[in-house]
Image 1: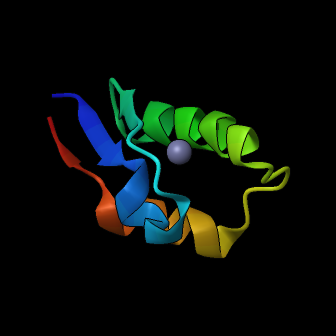
Image 2 (image 1 turned 90 degrees about the vertical axis):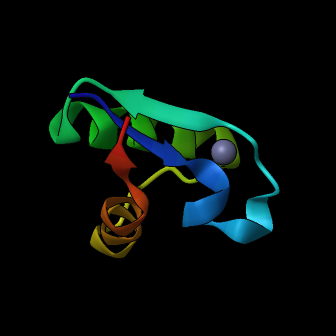
Length: 59
Ligand SMILES: [Zn+2]
């Protein structure tokens, strides 16, 4: 089952409507890290990844 996470759920201040998808948790975290760069976040901190994990759910 795929995983999805709404960017706005990870960071409500972003006002971003992007939905990050992945075939599994590992892939989603990779894609989220990639997407974070579009917000100027160069380094995905453990804290950020934790927020992504909390916001992610099954597709
Ligand atoms: Zn975003």
